[in-house]
Length: 295
Length: 276
Image 1 (tube, chains in turn orange, red):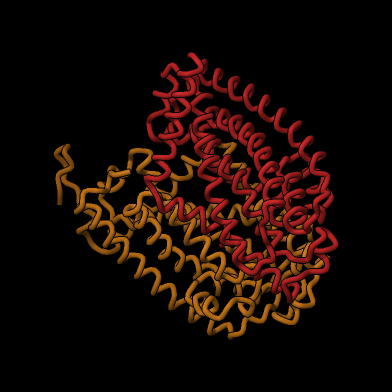
Image 2 (cartoon, each protein chain N blue to C red):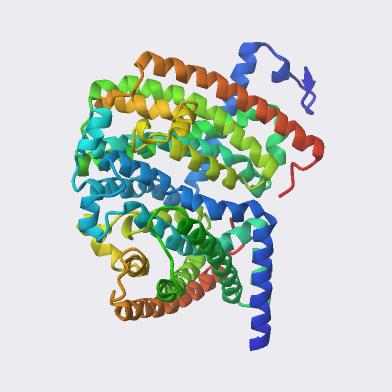
């Protein structure tokens, strides 16, 4: 028990029972999520822009594919994965990879943003573990990403008449859910490296670029060089994209659905544990070296 | 302010910007390597959709089926556009974050002079980075070679492109004084350029993108640069394109100047310069 300064005793959530502590953490995550939404909606024009962005971002990839093939259907793609429709193939890939960008950018940049606002020290002094803060950020970015996907899909459906199997939507979302957990681990690493290197955007951009190359977003795994194929198998986005396309448009993945789910589950554990450990180590290092507030 | 004092202020701003740039040397390495890495997904996409490194459909649109060379040239030239957007357009927002914006506004130097210093520093760093990229790319087997006969007209086109685009970036810097949260807008503009100019794909593939692209100087510059480097065409109507770019430069510089001055005056009058 502690004294809150008003003469009343309050329970310290960090030393209370597990359900109470989890409730306390959940409210902190929710508060962080709400704070981010409030900040975002302070700039309404910018918020509207962020909903149009995904469409503008997607179209060059679709047009590039059409320019290469000279139409919507590629016989070569059919030979590789059993589907010819390049518009649906590319769109599904880029729609779901948006989650990776959000994880890297929103979480990777989160601590740097607080530093720029001058509120990093206040956030770190709050009576919750630091990973709760990044989880709140992550919650906001996932919700935002769903909104963006909705706009993206509505546009593509209206213009290109996307051909997907509606029955594949639920299993695809289940796989995406698992992918998000693993991405949270990667996002934790990004957020912590910002504490060390300060220019967080650079790390997010670099890792994001590398993941964009090895993840089979607009191409199948088979066209990557062998070493990249091996790297791709350690990345959760590979399974997220391949399985989503498998469920929605029948892409042949090269492994079974069960294998895909098991591998992503393993990657979830590996990336989240690794992310939490890296975050804790870097957090301790920056506190000890006194560089937390350095720019 | 006298001309000498203005020149000294521009020089001081250039030195400051370059010093900040090199305080994070890893950023310079990043910009030299990653724009080239960003084209790899296009290479793999081409391989998956076409099955080879040459596309007949692409050749019908661009005159060359070598889509990789097409993308690489687009990536190199667009560096100038994006460095202008980030380095100049977003620069005043950065000063706000650093807490130095009020000092710039309060100094006897016009903010436009400060922006010119930033522009020159950005142009110098980008030119070095693109030269490094061009050297690396010409050593790799992408079918791109640079000779003096090719490089000289390309340099002229790039210079004209930069002049006009930095005029636009100055106007955008004024816009950031007004709307404050400019980071996302810079990203959107980046993607608008990817969509409406032939950086990554031939815009002729869609009637709307083809029409809009003609209003963007980058389109004219890229078409001429690719014809010179990729198609070995000496007669690409170079002087016609130079004339078009000069007209666009004049419009963008004059428009950029007046837009910046008007927006800067408005934010001063509203008292919102120091707001976040």
